[in-house]
Image (cartoon, rainbow, N blue to C red; front, side):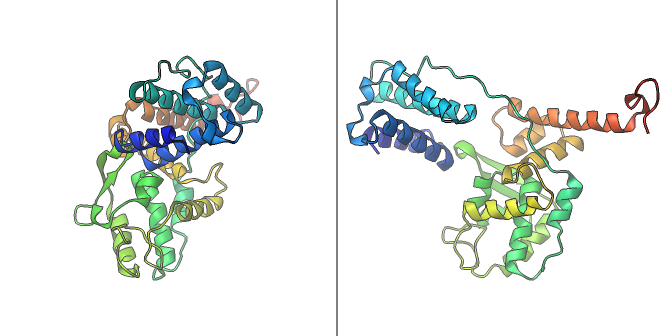
Length: 303
């Protein structure tokens, strides 16, 4: 990794307080660009000699290799931020990525799982006295009951899980804290988990741990969710599907958009509004199934 890239990553990590996931993504994107522009010899990287045409060549290469528009758009964003940083901190005279525009990817509606299916997966009758089984149930329940992100769940501190108040204190994107309430059922499950946890909180106070007392890692969380959602044949099987399901069911059951937005930790209501399209689609499907005039074909009522 070149010194300029290291400097940039340090800047977005320490001064902009971007999440570890975002910093890692930018590092991967910039490393890929440096490798491409130097033909695999990063020590020869000369960022001030790069032109817009050079960047367009790389983008064309990424597109021809089958990379999705979403991924290409993110890489362009990384380049734009990197060269903007070079202009402001290292004397670069021009940002070669400033004028590059990429096509907006189509917006897919969030994938979610219906409540009856999720409840069947979560309440699957596993051993209530087994630490691994209880940990699995709690992870699934916490995702679905609070809408927490995977990174937030992974870094959740034991001291931030308040049983008396039935609240989680969550550190979200850009190090913004928010409070998420939860119900008595989840509180009981948390208490059972704590009683079964072999060694108390993790080395740095983490709430979720493994049997060896070490903090739970992202891949382990993903595997638990993926395995659980395989049982209902979900289209996608990531922790974010449970977050989507939380938001959709909250809106379906009467929660207002602003409240759901705050619970999710969204910076803007516009981000949350996509879930209203999901609920509208659900209403339309129910209408088609239930209303006799929606079922009429050729002048006859459907069966």
